[in-house]
Amino acid sequence: MRDRVVVVSGPGRVELVEQEAGELRDGTFRVETLYSGVSAGTELSFVKGTNPYLNVTWNAGLGLFQPGEASTPYPVTRLGYMQVGRVVASRTPAVAVGAVGAMTYGHRSGYVADPVAERFVPLPDDLDPLLGVYVAHMGPICANGLLHAAADLCGADVRSLGDGVRGRRVAVVGGGVVALLTALFARRHGAASVVVLDPTPQRRAVAGALGLETLDPDADDPAVALKTRWNHAAGDRGADVVFQCRGQAWALQLALRLLRPQGTVVDLAFYQAGADAVRFGEEFHHNGLALRCAQIGRVPRGLAPTWDRERLSAETIGLLRTYGDQIREHLVSAVVPFAQAPALLTDLARGRRQELQVVLAG
Image 1 (tube, rainbow, N blue to C red):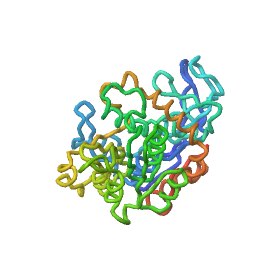
Image 2: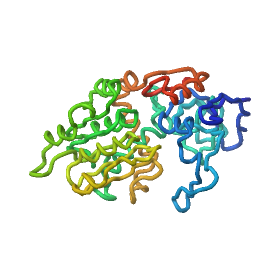
Image 3: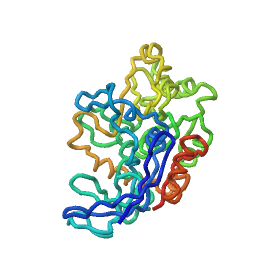
Image 4: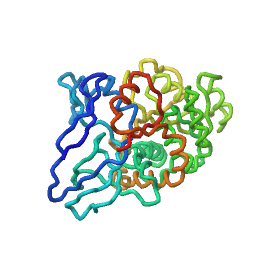
């Protein structure tokens, strides 16, 4: 048996390669891919050649990038983390044949997994399996952003994702998938106001279709607009928390300008080109602001025992049950056959095609 695998063989070169399927051994199971979601930021960084793992060594022990051999050299054979598969064979009692679950094994037509080493998140029968592409990893990324906002207020005593947004004014910079799911999480968990800021009209239109308020950062100064509206006390105006979801310097600069004094930017973005234009001597310094990086590799300090990846996936399923129909209609912009993956990824990387969320159908 052979599987089709999406491989990035070099900058701008994406191929569909046939590989021998993994061996089904005792304790393992095999899935056939139903859907595979494309994460435009992370995946396109490998196609474009801008991901730091391609050029330097990541020293995990020290937590440093250092000169040396690439930690992930070409060819990149495991691309993507938004898969939904149906179990077609199993030699473990942990996973039953016929089960449909969310996983993170990359763009490939099938996969053999060990449930001790890899996550399989069963999808409930009442959930559209296409939406399951968000359950294992993408949704938890966004939920982890809210968790960081909650930890900023409550420390290790976080009881709900709403602890950092409930009753508060929330701004979300960016209009991509991470931003829109984060905004929906904030609304679902009781934010008093949620405003999405993105310069792209099409993305603002999607946010509006999802029932979210939007502002164009290229129009009138949105920091002036929101700080005029969001008044806490004399000399204390602006967003309680900003979720920064667009990996460009102007977006981080805007996020800092939106905050009330001593507020926090929770940053979920990936700055592939750095952020040289961020002016830390201005609002960041004079308003005593905080900047927290929220990446799915870790939850806030002290919360790992109670807020593991399974709980974040469960929160994602709850979000999809609430907004699934709207997400399917407005956020998923294209569903394309798996065989078209190389052309699709190349077109996206070169800007020949614009999509919000593409899902590959196996």
